[in-house]
Image 1 (cartoon, rainbow, N blue to C red):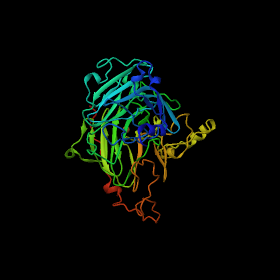
Image 2: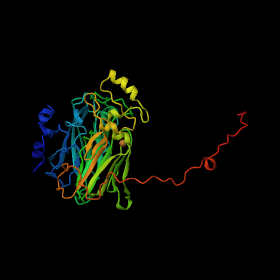
Image 3: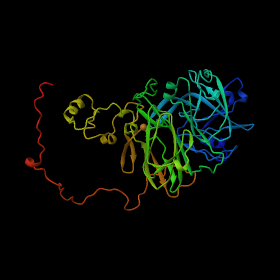
Image 4: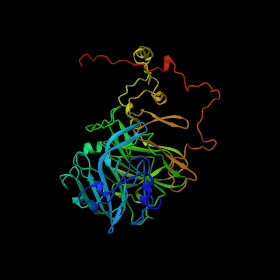
Length: 455
Ligand SMILES: [Cu+2]
């Protein structure tokens, strides 16, 4: 991992020659790196420019740049992509440089950046630099601040990064369609002094959502609120990378929300503090401890904690957001004895299973036949059986002795003796009620008021 180019070559990324990108002015365009796999690529230290500590994008990667006369040049290609949402399901999305979300752009406060955007979509687009202070004419709002980027055309954005923080990029042209199709990415501006706000591990992801009918692969783009796939970086559990850290590490997680609803993100285990918002860093005196932080539509939050050993769930606390598509529109069957009906149905549909009459955990245990290209609604295996989750769920895995730069899944946590919940098998004493109700004396007597005929 000596430089970005050999790193990305080794990781299987494809370098497109500039000529393949644009015939006119090809020589002046920086090469556009394309990445086709959804696996996490940990960026190497920056090969040139100001030093910074790169972030790790869950199931993602950071875009290499070219240094030209002191300007950092990036090349984004807006294009249709195929994204694996989780093993067993692929979606036809729109994104950047081969993936949705697009690659994370990382630069440093004070950097002048020049970002080329080539449009290979079937319609016009533009890019808005969400949260970044740019000249009005670089703000990317089609019609207001620029003409649209035509099909096949390349636009150039150029600005100086004035403040560090966690930002995003996304189109400001046909937003509902283009964001429902997955066009977005993280834009991280690092502090000029790499020691400022330094952490041991810095993770980032975007909350996004899709409405993909079970058995199909292309999102319905006119959906306003009723999405059925709740994803982090266009991945659903169990397809989301674990967030791996070493015991005692200072860990930062940066999250942006480009769905159409808020997500209270809850982390088990260590308490955290929100240290950054859309507007920049939160001063130390203004931080307070939390275990859940609500991230509203269009907002970004960065929070930090000191890692404690264990397997700690991290998830959206809206429980239907930790479910995949098949879970939506299922009727409540608790308390319904449908065994007789089931017998009749099995005559017609041999695969039919009775589900949900005692709650829905059985759905996590049964292998229900699914349409092609669909994820089970509640799935994932843990060391103690089915986890029964989907959507916006992952695990912060903290272990002693994880090597610096190692983000590989360390496997299940080994609980120290005496720290694991287990079944109680000794005879239970009979339950004693505090006072048995006496029918005559204590039962509430209700007398209906009379004389209301006139009402
Ligand atoms: Cu949510």
